[in-house]
Amino acid sequence: MDVLADALRVSGARGALGVVLKAGGTWGLWLDSSGGATLHIVSRGAMWLHVVGGKPLEVRAGEAVLLSPDTAHGMAGGRDTTMGPCDRKATDQALVDGSPLRLGSAPARTEVLVLHYRQDPEVRTPVLASLRRLTHVTSRENAQLRKIVELLVTELAQPQIGTTAAVNSIVDLLLIQFVRAWLARHPEQASGSWLGAMRDPVVRDALERVHARPEHPWTTASLAAATAVSRTTLSRHFRSALGQTPGAYVTQWRMDLASVRLRDTDEPVESISGAVGYASPHAFSRAFRRARGMPPGEYRSRLRA
Image (cartoon, rainbow, N blue to C red; front, side, top):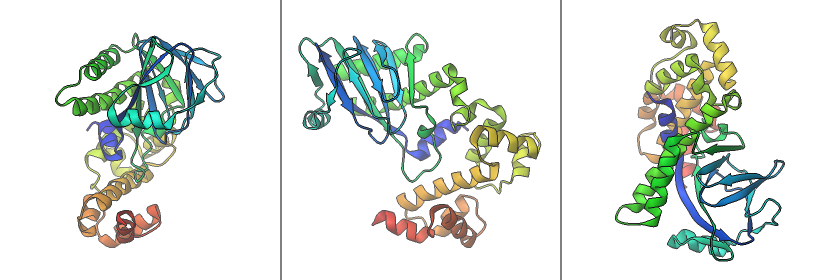
């Protein structure tokens, strides 16, 4: 079981190409928080990235910066350039017709691909939220990242049949590569987060089993036995890596699975309860009410309304 792939699938962490920014001369742009994670890839030239409370960061061609959800930031051609507000009309037009967003004056010397990643708000497992505020990775550190960026740039420069589907797939693949690069480069930043838990072999082994068989009647004891460690060891590792007990994580993941199925399918509550590991609809409803503040039927009705 690939836990990261499974969590991204259920959490709906999908990427979308925002705009291709082309800038020259003196330019600066301030972006309010987008509600999701943002990835900037400089394909030509260089830019300066500004985040409140941090030092300006120069990002050059072949480099990328991933910002955690809801991080307001600015981009500029110079370290001390004044940044203006985003032109929403021009941005909306670029999103509609795929045209580049042009800033400053011609000729354009800097090109930036702006990508956005959002997570399903009904899923509580914090995949994207566990990313630190800002992570800067160069293509020299990750050859795969460089190849994928080159593929994306080529696809955008020469649109043809299937380009939209290709770009969506490449954008999703970029997130995986960026997470890999982030984990390899910043192990100290990864501790205490969902993504960082992948570095702990005890926790990772347990998560693989939970994600592979969420319907299994897992307890701390049975999960410890399956991973060949003691209950004390398993609990200690979970608290250190995720800040919660094994049982709390099992319940959280089951509720995530159930929430998505309640919203997106017409499956009876009885079927969903069994699929996520509850012996009876009554036990499932009780657990779901504790987790989401309302019974499953009401939850489904409210979301669909």
